[in-house]
Length: 81
Image (cartoon, rainbow, N blue to C red; front, side, top):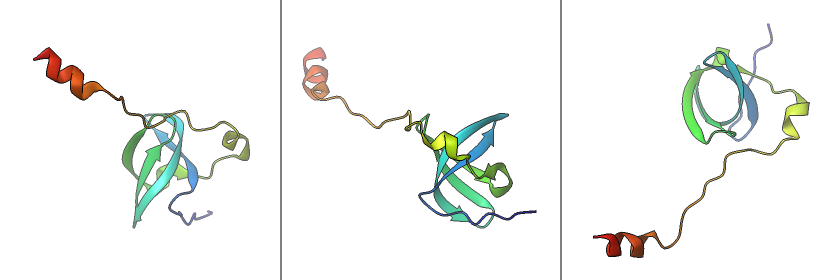
């Protein structure tokens, strides 16, 4: 059986709730791997047996989750009160 060495910042596949997802490794602590779901924008801790190498073809699609913020909401909140 092939044992993976997980590297922070690398992209892997994780089976979560019965479905495969693309993830970026955020932290490694023994068998516990903190991952960021690059297509959903969420973090989760999974065990290393759920993490697999990602096939090269799945690197072509860019991440589908983006961090954003909305400007001007501060003045809207003040005028609404």
